[in-house]
Amino acid sequence: MRQAARIPLLVFCSLALLHRAPAQSMKDFFSSSETPVVYLGIDFNQAKLIDDANANEMDIRSRQYAGINELVVTESKKFDLNKAFHKTSIDHDLGPVNKVNEKADAAKIKSTNTSDFHRFKDDDIRAIVRGLDPGDKKGTGILFVMEAMSKSAKAAALWVTFIDLKAKKVLFTDRVEAKAGMGFGFRNYWASTIKNLLNSIENKKYSEWKNKFQ
Image 1 (cartoon, rainbow, N blue to C red):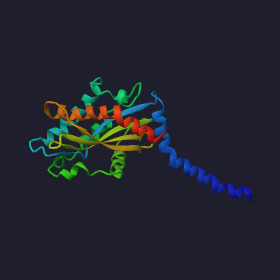
Image 2 (cartoon, rainbow, N blue to C red; image 1 turned 45 degrees about the vertical axis):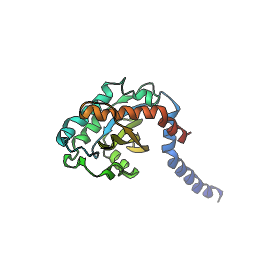
Image 3 (cartoon, rainbow, N blue to C red; image 1 turned 30 degrees about the vertical axis):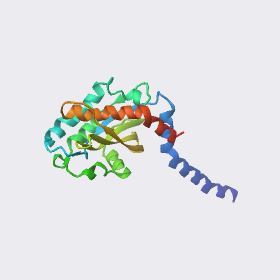
Image 4 (cartoon, rainbow, N blue to C red; image 1 turned 60 degrees about the vertical axis):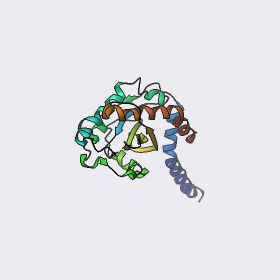
């Protein structure tokens, strides 16, 4: 009888550990500057460009999305991912987001509806992550999901998302708004929001997120 009574308890403990696994993984992420991390870039697939009537949506999809992603990784001193996420080194792989960004519906990019700036929920981010193919990569992935870019508000809304690459599951995601800075042309203008996002992570958000998992 005693041995039989242990089985439900063991099952309960196992389920409890599974429920806590994502938090534990995030705790590991924040516990060391050497944690293996892969930066996956910016997912623009469902992004809305608000109040920019003159924008060329075909050019945005075919050229500008890839240009912004490439700029972030090639100009690493300006877009300092290591510093923002307190890591010694962060690898990057833009392949998965480039594939999904190329499939964005150009006809749905532009919008005049200001409510499109606030339309994603956590479940939307989970669905977007399931649509990525990180291959055989393991460890923690960092993905920026672009929700919207508002020309009238001069700001972008992004979801900073941490992913268990092997399981293709969201460990943690948080919506952050970032102001646009100076920049000539579509690429540079909206890339400035990524720079301001990274500054916000370094100066404020990183500590806030770390405290959630201590």
